[in-house]
Length: 384
Image (cartoon, rainbow, N blue to C red):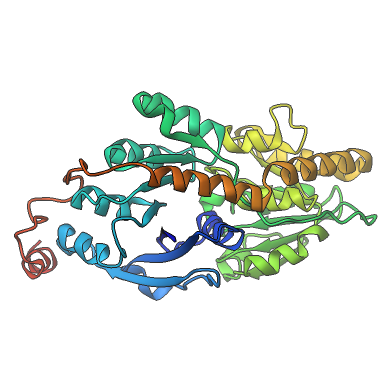
């Protein structure tokens, strides 16, 4: 039985959905999945663990940034069952542990976004990583340029995404959806501006899902004449049930990798209208915008024009929704995509890592094996 250990920082968003889907759609009887949460105690009050019913075990590791990093790594490594367990890295702390201690485990890094953050992690820790998975072809190509000697270990894989079917009932084409954290980075400030531009042109209904949307200061930015409903944080399984009821998914985010919410919307026949970020988003919608609209420079007038055009042209709306659904359902099949991920996990397990040596990648002079943690903690906490 192969043990696969996923490390999760517990943050909201697509990474948790990817982990959840990999567990839910695994059909390999020779593979068991475990979750280790890595939670900074400064975020403890905001942390709510996801439900992972398919996980063999779920453990929560709390740490402090004032600790000796070597001590943090040792404490975290104590949760790893053995050297044969396949470690799946989704963020920095687990990679820091593997490099610092020179763990011999098979290691897979998943790069969830076309961001320097993920590429820098890959380059910094490449000697401790057996296989890399980029969730778009753009990520794969960029990482191969940065790590040309590791080209054969770099993979582009489609994400496993829940199966959804579009609603073919006749609709008015006026229901707009937003899903995500209601913060400027996700384009929250653009939404009321787009709505204001459309208010006198046609009657649209806005439906806003995500943490932060219930805050009064955020709702106060919306024009009183706009038809808008706020739902706050909503479990993804509940959103999926109602997705086919909507017509458009607006996402004016300033950065995305391969957004799971957009793929889910496409499967449900909801037309994505998103910031033209290139990379994974362009792969999803097509360079000729055959499966949705890519809005240049995140221009609010561009969003308004796209929504108005689709509202006024039902034939265009139907054809684009059908194209989006067909593409997403073909390429992001949950079981098939999960099998591809698990094949890479097994490939990583064939590597021999006996020559892997400890590398100091993070920390200062206070982060050494021979310094007791209480000394480092005291100096950082009280004398800095």
